[in-house]
Image (cartoon, rainbow, N blue to C red):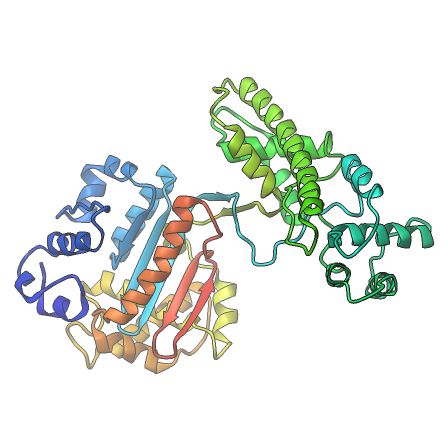
Length: 454
């Protein structure tokens, strides 16, 4: 039921809501934000739903829980882990907050890395690219990619076929390009700037190799999701048709060049990318047939996207929240972090102690006995660290801060934490970008966040 306290910290409640269902009134006011969004409310305890209607949770692609007790959190964690449903557990107490993502396996195709490496294949050019470039004379309107390619070939001829790999060798290549300029030609300048970023494209790095050698990729079965089937097709392509290289993405950066010359070059890269993707798609179709899956279960469009993003695939395997509570956390990580005065690990320990306190005493620290609870939760934190085999002293201010609010939320802290979680929910639903792995802690007093993996 809505209380006076709720009115002070919740944007979506009004004084007239006091004594009424908080779920009902929040749903009503939230839906006014966007008429295209539907919301429902259920006035029922989460423990009751878990006990009587666990199938209820199959309806969701992500479940978010706020302020659950330790007991309820463990029950929900176990249930959602079995259902393979992503789960985010949030806490907001005074100026502190935390969020924990539980996901069994999270496979991402579109990871959107900050620094995407250009895959131009200038060191190992494909036949159609070689034929095209060999028929073009250098000039001020030629794309820098062609300028760079011709100078790489000149460098190789001068160095017994070896490519420039060290800083000194790449500096020599840059100087070769500079000396061949007849004026201030922008395309030559672009070629000089691109020397460092234009090598190494199409190679399989260690992170991707780990995915391709994963048992889920090597040993497919009828329950294998599309990601792993496409990964297996990619692996087979690299080993056979690709001759050790990834499918070409076929994406060119912008260049100063005559439009027709740039478009012709772009078409050559696109045609090669389509050829590689078609090869992977044919292998996907063969694998689907072997697994007795429908041929349209994975579309050609899906495979093309997979091939374009192949260099940046990511797989995250998480851990259960219930294991963290019942089997113990990563004690070495906690001990190391507690030695760092700037770490927020102390906040994590105090919030875990708060959960244990609530389980034992039936109320949140500071909710009933403000003066004596700081010492009691400090004792609880000490016992918790003893269980983990850690001997460390936590700042008394952390215990006082937790008790000062008695479990109450501050709207600005909850809003900030809610925004952080909203980002992660969108990632989990759209399967784009990598979510944090797996815990974020927020200190609103110092405006600091930190992430930890448990």
